Amino acid sequence: MTTIRFLITPVTILFLSLPLAGQAPPAAPPANPLSADAREAWGFVKTIVLRAAEKMPEENYAFKPVPEVRSYGQLVAHIVYSQNQICSQVKGSAAPNLPPDNATKADLIALLKESDAFCDATFEGLTDAHAAEQVKLFGQNRTRLTGLTMLSFHGYEHYGNMVTYMRLKGLVPPTSEPRK
Image (cartoon, rainbow, N blue to C red; front, top):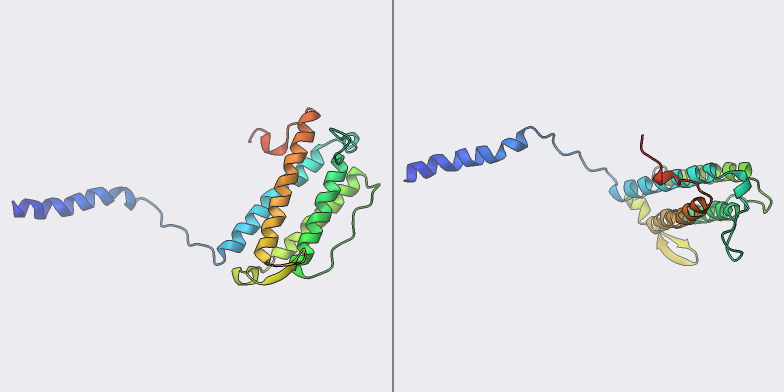
């Protein structure tokens, strides 16, 4: 009986480990996982916000679902302004100029791309240690990572507004488009 157990145990272990033999080893985690995750979230949100801004026809940039809310163009301008404010505070630098009140769709798209590039620069060379450093963020001591998380959350929040405006105008928002 002991001999059978002695033979069955290694055979069972070998049999159970066979599915693992064909698997690739797990990828090494990134050197700075928190910064990498923040950068990835930002990359996604900036892309969908820009696509939504580009997709809305210019004649709908003045559209307001109700009088008490921002127009679509004012919403895009707000996103530009907020991104610039958050990234300037995280970087400790001056924010780019505000979008003018009479900005056209083309103006706002250009300003949004400039704001995206300004915020992209905030991520350049960012390490987890650097992300953990304290900065003044809207008058409070916060980590850079908190600011960069706010950047993405704010973008997602207003992308949701953009989706509503687009749906009311019969447009399919970028994240609902069929995948290719």
